[in-house]
Image 1 (cartoon, helix red, strand yellow):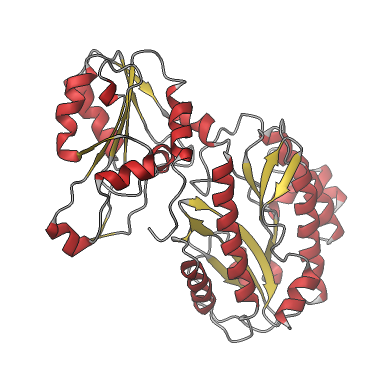
Image 2 (tube, rainbow, N blue to C red; image 1 turned 90 degrees about the vertical axis):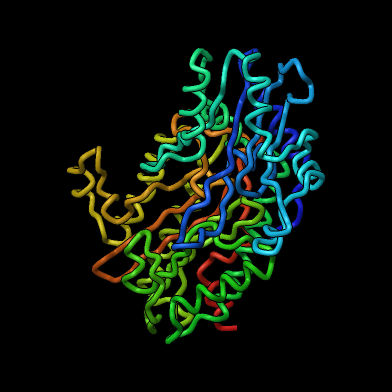
Length: 429
């Protein structure tokens, strides 16, 4: 890992919260993510399962966690299993966790090699009534390949058919959405790295620069500051490319007179930042570009005020839609007649602002959370309105990350330049 060690108290706290919600006489099993083939003899860079990291702090493949708070053998109340290293693995793949290092990272005292998993599990599982398995229940997830937890579920059901099988995901959904102080600090670190990359980029952009060159500048700054890398595939969309919401080709030359839409964020210790900005290639907005930019900024600032504890997802987005509608009328993109005749299921503003305003943020960029539960203290959400005008080859999106506290909300990206005058000043300094 490139990032500095994370305080093990985070993972001790998370496990304590999780097991407190389990039914009596329950065992829970969590798997690390799969390693995915990239070519004939290579795998993609490993990315840890967010729930597994949340409970262990272990950032290594082929790892398993057992939590059995009512286990009659106290040695096995919480157990971590790791792939055993060897001289061969050390030569070809590098360092792997020792048992002592894993204890220090996770706070788990009982650490065994993976080869001992089946024997230890079999020695204790029949003392449990319930088996909790962790499945991916993020409502954005849609994938056909069975992952490690699903494969283990099939195996356990065949071997232990009379146990009661339970879902860990509903518990994780409620726990992960409320961020602890350590998690907030890690997110702030990701935001700070993202800020520095953006400042670096503002000073680099000029007519004739390629989108991929800008991406390289961002990547350089991320890695220089110990970020794992990008939280997601970065969007560097100049001119008409900004109309494509998930444009990631980043292969065009930035032309004088165009605006570049940036959407990128650093990943630090598996926690993510998610920022969007729009900047003029020449260093100066045209009058029309600035009008649209200021309209989006106004929507963002008004929407941010609505991100408070108790707010309901759909009501929040409906209110933002009303704010956006007024701005689109002011820009001449909609008129009152368009609004009067609109289909309530597809409001007129959706022609120019077709995505949602916010999503939860954390270990996943689109973090695991309920769409139907009111916002809570400790939630971190994005706020990212945009206006996209195909006929003008113009797309503007602005996005910051907002933490809800008991006293209101805090913009974790408040120190990242966003005012149009400040953007121009930095670009021309």
